[in-house]
Amino acid sequence: MATQHDTIDTAHRAHRGTDMHTGIRWGAAAWAGLVGGIVFMMMEMLLVWLAMGQSPWGPPRMIAAMVMGEGVLPPPATFSAPIMMVAMGIHLLLSVLYGLVLGAIVHRMGKGAALATGAVVGLVVYFVNFHLVAPMMFPWFTQAQNWVSVLSHVAFGFVIAAVYIGSRDRRV
Image (cartoon, rainbow, N blue to C red; front, side, top):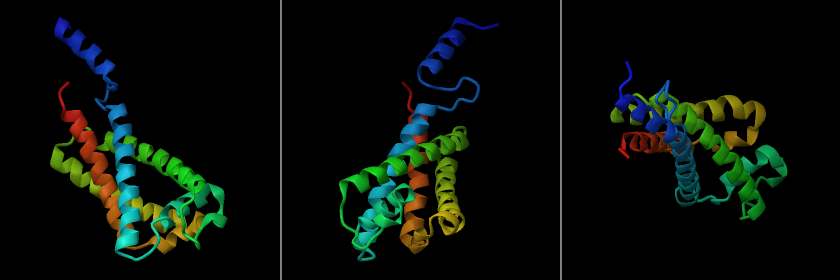
């Protein structure tokens, strides 16, 4: 028999964007994906520039080329607002999708397991995207098969898991 507390708890969870059957906080998962995507892009651009001596605008151009075509690829790898907007639109949409998937995977895990799983999922995303999908559909991404991309993807998954778990564990 449902108590008054159960009814209030159910209403509170529904209000917070929680799927009552799974406990997944979809809004938190989407937000975690956005945060992870922003951290990824900043990290990728900085490491490409500082550690590899390449233009930080190369990675966004590679992403934008997925819909704009290979004509936007470097050289020159200079800043272009339209190219950056297209790149971020694609990248953040994919980041939200990955956030939703990762949120569903880690939502019942403890912090340590969730963070480790996030890092592993980031690594899996790297291998699938750069070693399976890229050679067939976007061959220019094979140029980015390097430690910067691996590290950025691991951090991407880790950040998504950290933001999601932090949001899940926060009591409101």
